[in-house]
View 1 (cartoon, rainbow, N blue to C red):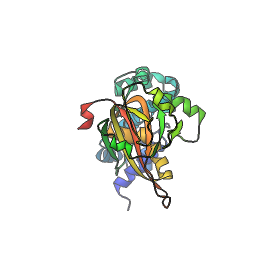
View 2: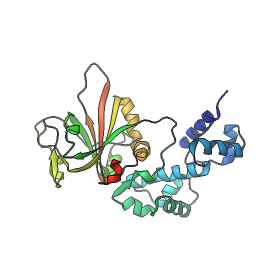
View 3: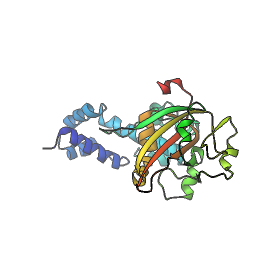
View 4: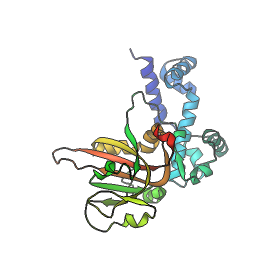
Length: 272
């Protein structure tokens, strides 16, 4: 016999895959096999939120990501995430995030703590907060990296469709060749990668997320960076850059040890 928790989890999966469609309580309760009242009570028990709020907040959270990464209009976004009108969307967005869609898009700080990630019963993530130059050993042990700038995300998405979420513009290896990234970093910086003298990161606070697995698994992991991992952490990311750090791996294995380094706002609360 299927447990009530399994039914709720299955319905959450249906909600996530159909977030932009009509998700009425009549349809969901019919799929669950429970009455509307009983399904609502079970959903509240496991998710600690009623069905309507979960759907609305998940739609708004998806819209927030699209706002930052694309140039959709408010009307286009409202339709994409299932709102009946752009007025209803803008009003709900203001209430949920505390600022208008336009101000959210233009804000240089991306506060992921305001987003609602998809509900998962079992979720684990390894991460730590580091500060450069104090914790430079945490990045010096890697052999190469991939770099992207958050404020260029929209442009690169138009140029490349090979990756759904994080296309990267350049590969930096452990060579002595001149590195153009160093020219772009005009702030006080620390030289990292001891075998690459001209590779530098700015001083500041960073979030370092760890991953170990195959590249296919990492692809799935990275697709969920903005929608799941960063909201779960509650990170406050500035519009700077994200870097993938790779440790040297044996040719006898298909698994990789990867770190995702993200520049974050200096906030003592993040380190508690």
